[in-house]
Figure 1 (cartoon, rainbow, N blue to C red):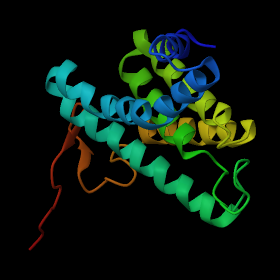
Figure 2 (figure 1 turned 135 degrees about the vertical axis):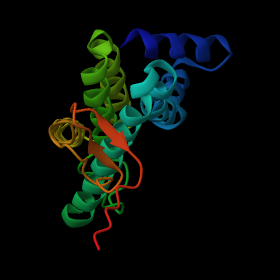
Figure 3 (figure 1 turned 30 degrees about the horizontal axis):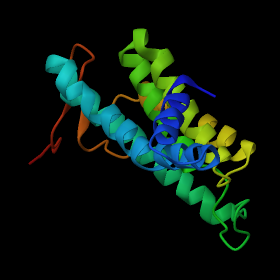
Length: 186
């Protein structure tokens, strides 16, 4: 059990819940509001911490997040794998929680290598919570993590982004810039 999950578990248990319930509630928190905070923070944090490059970094991270989510939901609709906790829900493979969190982790680790362990640790914790909650099998989250990492790698290799390419381009120094990139030729 990671230190964050252990801390949440301890907090919930001290509030009067039984320990089995505390672990389940920690998993639900990590899978719900915790994931939203992780993804939102991953996209918005560069605006606060990265000065002039913050806008373009946030846009690139948002692009990787949107692309990974689109690919994940597309794969789910084609594969139609039943969830371990509900055989009628055919959207287990791959885990989009793992996909999007690892895409954000890859992007943030590129921009802030000193924080790589924290970003990947957060993505791994989100993935673990999905398995612990019974919403995914281990291979659902491993495949999602691989897909998210791959999307981050491809995003970093593109000059103009993936889905948001009309808004992203590089200047003469190789820095990404953003804004409508409409070139009128008469």
